Image 1 (tube, rainbow, N blue to C red):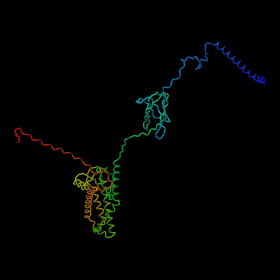
Image 2 (tube, rainbow, N blue to C red; image 1 turned 30 degrees about the horizontal axis):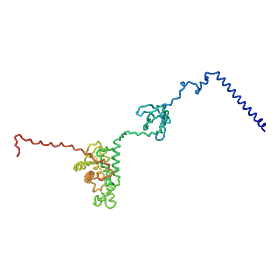
Image 3 (tube, helix red, strand yellow; image 1 turned 180 degrees about the vertical axis):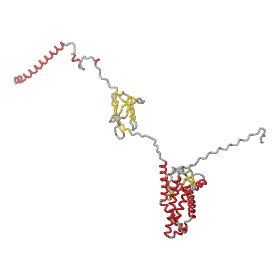
Image 4 (spheres, rainbow, N blue to C red; image 1 turned 135 degrees about the horizontal axis):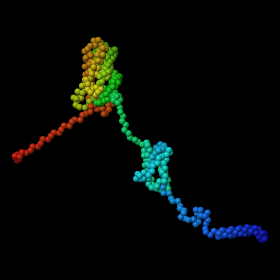
Length: 399
């Protein structure tokens, strides 16, 4: 048994001997090579960076970076990209270091920026400017700013709107036809503005049309016709419904004819204003004189006072025309004269009501419409104090 094991192990021992012999041969060759090169490593070996014996002075490690980068993206409040924005890198003291322009995607980049503190200012047309807080850059840092959304710039501009006198007059007339005493009775022909824009002919016809077609103005002739029928005025018209209708037609015709002739046609011919101008200031006597006098004196389109030809000729022409459809017995010159004086009296009384009452009860009158501006009184010089009596030298003192 031992001989068999010895025979089996013999090849293994032979392999070990061969390996040992090969190792000794290699060691011998190496020793021979070192003996032939005693001066050190070869030139090829010295080219390697980690080769032993290389001069350390010829190799330097890379220095750490002393600069940094800073970048960002400029957007508007709708997240839209803002190209062409001027981006300035400043020191905290305001010194401009560098300026860049955002690209088509709104991005910008500052490269190789020395470490330190900076602010970023962004300016773009139509948008509000942006200034960042101070940013402290460290060496080798790449600082990315948060997304910057610029609001739309708010601008203040002065706009001068110029309106013509015709446009102003149109607006004033439209406001005037909203005036109603107690919110019911039309007060279209009273101007509470002392110096309104002058009226054109179309404004005068517009006022006449609106006043004669207002529903309340259909009621007034009905009241007058009822009183006339009750008193038996114009007996030729008869009684009953037929008589009332004739009287009503005549009275309403008087209103329409008189209004269009005296407040539209003739004022356009004579260039006069058919309105009553509320004074609202001064003594009671002065205001009464103004109210009654407005029946005979009116204001021209040029702003000057003139004889009220429009109204006086207008009521005369209206009285003559309406006289044609009165009954034969009442169709006289006296009727014409009576109607003229009646209209003058009614008109003057109406002006007094306009001056003292209607402003308080009329709706839709602007607060600034207060009539004639109050003229500041001229201050009287103060009374000069009498000089004190000077005692005469020879005056004796009173005991």
